[in-house]
Every structure is written in C-alpha cells, then in structure tokens.
Length: 394
Ligand code: PLP
Image: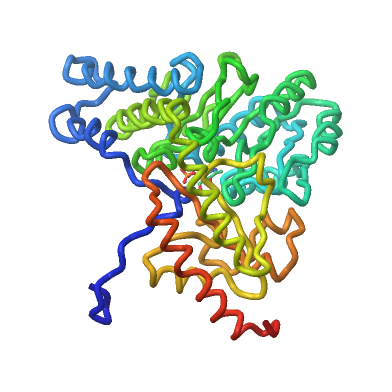
C-alpha cells in the first residue's frame, strides 16, 4: 500500500545500468559461505583451505568469462575501486612524467581520479566525442603521439547512452605507442560480445558484480601479467599482494556464478531478446512528437536507450513514471541528487532543452513486455501534461 492507501503499482524496473537484480542462482551459490563455510580463505587449516578452493574456482569462472588466466584476476570491492587501482597504481609505477589520456564522457569513478592527478600536477588529456557519442579517434591518435610514459583509461561502453568505443582498436594503437591501456568495462561485460582479453590487447580492465546480477560490493580488476601497476589498498598479502583485505568470499562465489550465466547469455539469444524489447520501447517513445535518441543507434549496447523529450525536465518525468511503478534514470545514478545536466550529453553538444529532458531506460534478462507496455502507456500523457506547463511555451 502507498501512503495514500492506494495499492502500490507493480514494479517495472528499467534502471539496470544503475544496478541489477541479484540472480537467484548467484544468491543460492553464495549462501553456504554465510552459514557453514565461513572460514578465512587465507587460513592455514583445512576449514579455511576449503573456502580458498571455492574462491579459486570462482576466480577461474571469472577468468574464463574474460578470456584470461585466473592469476590475472584481482577481486576488489566495486568497479570504482578497480578504476582507482588501475589509474593511481599505473601512474605511480610509470612515474611523475606520465601523461594520462582519458575521455570527457567517463564515469565519475574515472573522472575523479584523473582530476585528482591533474590537481597534483600530472598532465591529463581529455578526448572528446562526436555528436553521436562516438570517440574522436583523431584526437586520441594525436594524444598517443605525446612523448614519454602514458596511461590510457577509456570506458568500453557508456553508462548513460550505451555507446560502445572501439576498444580493440584503441588498445592496439596504445600498445604501438608504448602506452599502458586500461578500460572501464563496467557496462560492457555481459552486454556485448568481444570482451575477450585473449583477443583485445588491453593491459587492465575493470568491472563490477552488481551490474551483472551479482550482489553489490564486489568488483574485478584484470591485470595482464607484467603490467606496471602498484597496489592501491595496502595491508596484508591477499590477492598475491596486489589488493590487501580479507576476500569477500560469499560475493566472489556469487560473482563466479553470475559470470557463468552472463557468458551463456552472450551465446544463447538473450541479448537479442533484450535488444528487441529495447527497440520496441524506442519505437513507441519516438512516436511522441519531437523526441530523439541520444547516441549512435548502431554502436550501442542492446539494453540501453537514452532519449530526449525537449522542453520538460527529466526529474519531473521520473516522478510521474514512478506513479506507474516505472524505475528509470535521468542520467548517471551517481550524479542524481544534483541538478547538473549530464556531462556525457553536454560533451555530445545535445541542445539545452533536450539535455534537461533526457531519460535513460536500461533493460536486463528480467525485463518483460509488461515493463515496456507500462512506459508506453504512461509516457504520452506525462509528456503532454508537462509540456502544457513548460516555460518554453509548448
Ligand atoms: N564505471 C561505470 C561505467 C559505471 O557505470 C559504474 C556504475 O554505475 C562504475 C564504474 C562504478 O561501479 P561501482 O558502482 O561498482 O563502484
């Protein structure tokens, strides 16, 4: 029941780039590690050793999902920590003359470490994007020509628009220029094929469990053997002295299961089903006058739709959508709470009126036709009502 005594509407969760529902299979896999198998994976005796073996089994599943060696997987607490580790750790190893090359549309988990380095006197080059959110490759190549040690940190897929960067090509060019290459693949893993470290010459890759149906509080940093990178969290010898702190075995086990399921989904047609649902949502919303999609519609994750309804505010639309049980986002969940327009859409030169009227819908394996119908039923009326009140006279 709501506070007004009305029955709460059914939940239509379309905010999967913010977080995902933990898969029941992943939760089931982790529960024994909260009840019987609660030993410390670092202990010398068998009660801990058994737990250690289960953790290593999960590491092998994550490694197989990413196409790398289990010894190249470091477990962290989240995607943000993995990004911080890669950036600060590589710059410390490469030395004070390092140039950092990044983009203007990264998640704050990359932007803020890069800004902090800039404040400490490091040179940071911010590469822009085109109007459709794709990477300015000419500017990237020019940055790679800067002499001296370099770290590139570049997202694989954008959390707001779903636009995919050409990471295989960008990593290969970085390697030819002698740069260390890190990619924040938090939104790409499980949602696009090709995240395969045996084929892509990236040195480091970050991702987060809670975006692929594992619990919140577990992240991964892939570090290719031989990559110059110092530890970020200092303390004990866990994770082969690359990340101190007692390992979160329940979540690691859940993540192993989630990776196994995500790997299956890149092959079994689930991504096509998600894409078809997203496309139906997109077509229905584009029927509302003056709407437009933000981001390249081909080079895009199959689950993401960023769409602008000019002359009205995203926050107001979200408020009304919530009445219909729909959860969506007006930009990055991490920046909601501030009314600053999206830095991603600003970098794409999206006009002012559309910038403020943008919504992000993001789907998952659990999304249904009923979720799409709920949005398509509610949105025309919401837009009409808000435009009637708009100071822009529509
Ligand atoms: N990078 C990207 C592209 C993201 O979308 C997010 C979360 O939204 C993160 C990093 C941060 O991940 P976490 O929430 O696990 O810290």
